[in-house]
Image 1 (cartoon, rainbow, N blue to C red):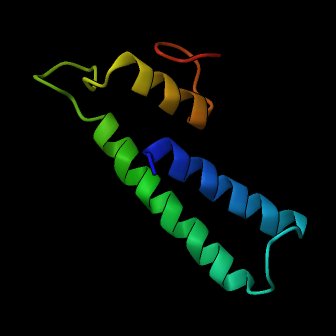
Image 2 (cartoon, rainbow, N blue to C red; image 1 turned 90 degrees about the vertical axis):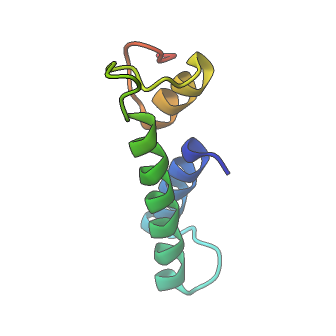
Length: 81
């Protein structure tokens, strides 16, 4: 999974628990899975924001930046919104 996919999956799992549509009855396990996905997304997003050669730009290819911005709901440079 990519970072944006982890982010999106964490949000999906949390919505399912909030809305009572979770698969199975072990809410703690679902929340744990959401936390794992969120942590992996955070690691990827942190790497995305790391400066390259002293520049503010992360050095990501434009399509990767767009995918991250879309998943995170970010507007502006590189975003689709």
